[in-house]
View: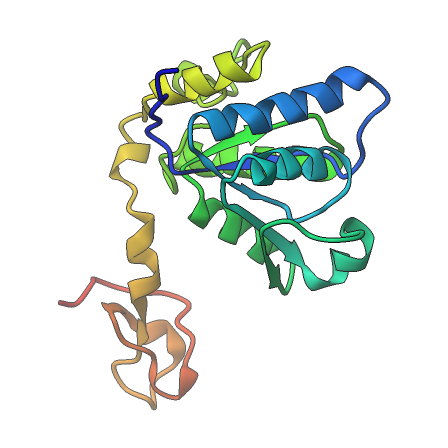
Length: 222
């Protein structure tokens, strides 16, 4: 059998902590796990051993691929039962969980789930729309045609992963000029500690003396 090569090393899968009432949901989770194994793709997921999360992670682990589960410490008693599979990384809260999952993955897939799965999916869609990441996850004018193409869907796991392989990010003119990784290198500095904070300027790679907070800022200093 010819080996299938993927452009992705790791894919993040969002999914419910319950299995749903239809066997088709569970079958889809297992099918997706097997498809990732066939393409030699590792898994990043929410860390639970129950529901659809548990099924897809077990399938990937049984196939010999690496599994990374990221889960808040508070949820561990609820979403982990019995033995865990792969590597489990405990984090402090839900925000850190989503950020770590996004950082570790090359693409995102959402299986059926509840409000938590929906929230995770919407956040990575928003990040893609704003250009924070370039990883693959209208009618009334609220979503542009370009943003609509952020989401791809397919009836089977095989077709879904194939579409992800072919996905090419597109951005509008404004989004393409946003550079999010520069934000953390900007902070404030006061021109004179005795002056009120509204006389501060924005500068690069420095912190305001005494932790002063700038309400307004002028030109960016080199």
